[in-house]
Length: 83
Image 1 (cartoon, rainbow, N blue to C red):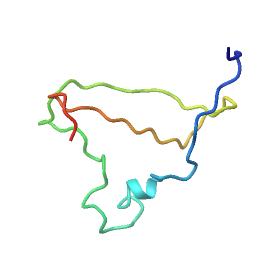
Image 2 (image 1 turned 180 degrees about the vertical axis):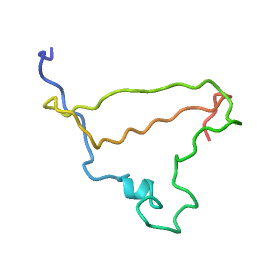
Image 3 (image 1 turned 90 degrees about the horizontal axis):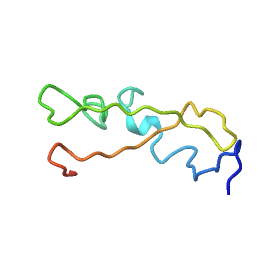
Image 4 (image 1 turned 30 degrees about the vertical axis):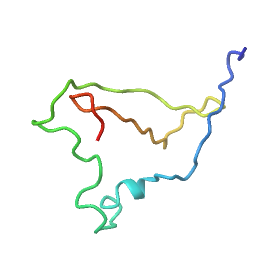
């Protein structure tokens, strides 16, 4: 049984594989990779399906807030399919 006050550490990849430079090259002044950075326009007036909001906080194994974490989520489209 895990004692209160102790958070079990999960595996981490401190510098990658998807650091922000790889995700947003245009924002980092690296042009020519993508026309626009990935994820800059995820929803528009033609997007089907219910809108949800995901919120949360990331803590390290010592319970300190992690301010530079990247969370990757995948969600099916309005038909329940993945591209």
